[in-house]
Image (cartoon, rainbow, N blue to C red; front, side, top):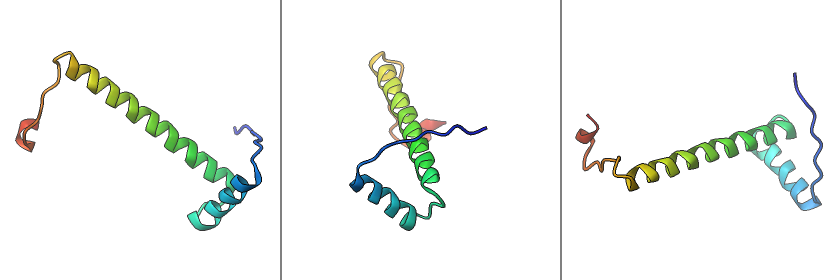
Length: 72
C-alpha cells in the first residue's frame, strides 16, 4: 500500500526535479524522490557506522590494518 505525500517546491527546484527526471532516467517525479530518500537513508546508515568505528578505535577496540593480509 502506498501513501501519498504532497510537497511544495519553489519554481527553481521544480525545474531542477523535472530536469533530473528527464535526464536521469527516472520514470516519474515520484521515482526521483523515492531514490533521493533511499540515498539519504543509505548515507545516514553509513555515517552511523563510521561514528561507531571511530568510537571503537578511541576505546582501543580497533585494529589498524597495514595490508590486506591483516584481514585474515
